[in-house]
Amino acid sequence: MSEPVLVIMAAGMGSRYGGLKQIDPVGSHGEIIIDYSLYDAFEAGFKRVVFVIKQSIEEDFRRIIGDRISGMAETHYVYQEVDVLPPDLEVPEGRIKPWGTGHAVLCAWEYIDGPFAVINADDYYGKHAFRLMYNYLKESVPADGSHYCMVGYLLENTLTDYGHVARGVCVTSPDGRLLETVERTRVERRARLAQYTEDGGSTWVTIPKGSIVSMNLWGFSPTLMPRLADQFSRFMEEECRRDPLGAEFFLPTAVNTLIHQDQATVQVLPSPDRWYGVTYREDKPVVAKAVAEMRHSGIYPQRLWPERG
Image (cartoon, rainbow, N blue to C red; front, side, top):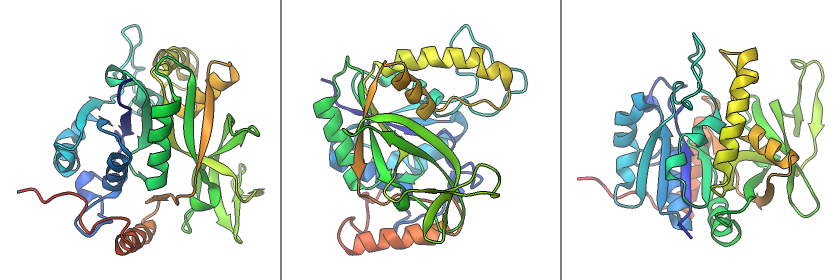
């Protein structure tokens, strides 16, 4: 069986900062969040990486990120652009917005020849999560099967103290199979509770402590790709026609469809790791402090990568 591939969705990386150069480091030697994901992934066993990026950021991406891991892994770059579509599809006039995470995964198809994992570029997932994923892909995801997996996080380990976040709350079976991911677009920590609102804050609903959420750390076999392509074609015919400038094809929604149509099963792998991300400017010192504490305790070395001459 082919070695598992790590697909990193990075096409939107740096957009909220005004470019890759503006991303603030969180490590002591200029490391950013993606560096820690790569370090943890390599330590877990991943040896092949596909970066899904925009062509306009390639030069900066290679210099700031890709060159750091040169020689450590087989590395490929693919472009996610609004005009990367099947031959029979056309970009709607005026469309600028990217097509979403499901489309990002499709862009990596040419390098998928075995089990593969998918992550966001700007989320910190933790060492345990990558070990869970790599081992499961090696042992329990046959290349020709429809049994997938997802690392799930405790909701309370994924919240920020500085505003609201969007989270996919997981509904699972007693044996840990994913039944559905329910998107909650505004989740906040309120009075020590995790609550969401769907009416602009007029009413709030408490999400039970211990609820599992998806942070887009998925594991698949290559069978996902043709099914994802079929769904994307339907999305273009239906959703894109209704909202040609704004509709997006999201990976969790595609997975929900496969589950509901009995085309796939997804095992949820619970992780005790804490998620970190810079959703708000105030989150950055929190992440930097957490990384410093992990360096101090020996979880990470002072410098992740060798100095480049």
